[in-house]
Image (cartoon, rainbow, N blue to C red):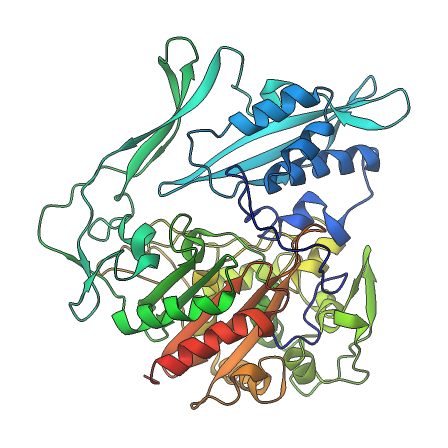
Length: 542
């Protein structure tokens, strides 16, 4: 985002040096925290002060944040049993291959007698298989000095964890799938490392194939399986008919993997797809092995989501590019929102607000959309939140109805509980500039159960002009020197007080749409921008 006015409240964050080592239990908080869960969990500048004692709620959320980030001594210190808590939190995921857990806090419940409970959802990505999701509760107790602490017990880690039962991961061996790109060129994890976790999930185009396994609840003494908590993969019914032909393009895939070197070792992901049919040309992740962030990740899309917000506003004639929509330094909607470095553009047009990514201007237009209208537009025209059958397991986005005015304000700028990933945002970009949603696909013959309507031609023209102007005179100027009629949008997504912002960029050129996220990239233009610039420089316009 060649970073101008693209931040949620609080501005850019650089509170600490980057971590050089991370525990197995929390490599980088990728979902509830990296996916906009900071708002849902009440972290950072989104912290809320309604309901039960705010100090108790803050302590619960701080415990979850420490646990997710791998700060186990700090998390344990927030409990009534620090030594026991640290041992259990450290051993809980041993052997489960958990990569980047996420925790999303729910609504606190007062239980009386100086106690309250904070429910939470845990999402545990199991490397190479999928995500184990469950719910639990944090009990909190008020101490004599008035401070709050987590009342330690095994069941808060998982309701069925006990002194006699634990969890065990079992994997089923499966033959590697042979695959080719769209032109018949052989694809392997050796030649294209990012495709390792992708090719492993292919099964002739069926979503249920690929690696299989399960997390079981077992008796600690005997090892006997008492129940299966979650199963991954389906029955592979594909007959040996030769390599699976994918929609991937070896040139794009190689260029995408090289381009991610610009992420400087940060976790990052990129997707490129064809605009006219949704066929995926490249899927790349950094690191290349492990969790497939590009397709299965859950992130707050930040200001790249303003493409959808703008589409919703333009659809109903609620604003026009030439309308004056002020961009003040601050705007308070329950909480104070601001632009980066408290920048302002008095008398700015909506076009200027888009190209400079002014948060306060977009939030100021929230009253022109109904409570659930943004989600309705995302689903009806962009396919976001519908079930996609890509050819491998995917996360297909979520735009919930805002719970209050503050959350509605945040959703206007791609925060709150709005969640997406590079696959979704590449598709959003393709839909915006073509007017028609095409379900993304990685193999031929995938089922399509989506139902969308085309965007009016006038809206498509307006969105294309806004994205082009963002390259020529706005926050995506990092792409300005490249050949072709390129349009783009930058984005920054708040993560937490403990992490730098995630950087985003989406772009289109010719028949290709691209989206990239760089975790803790600080700005979109400064982190995702160079990645996309390298990619588009390496592959001729198609």
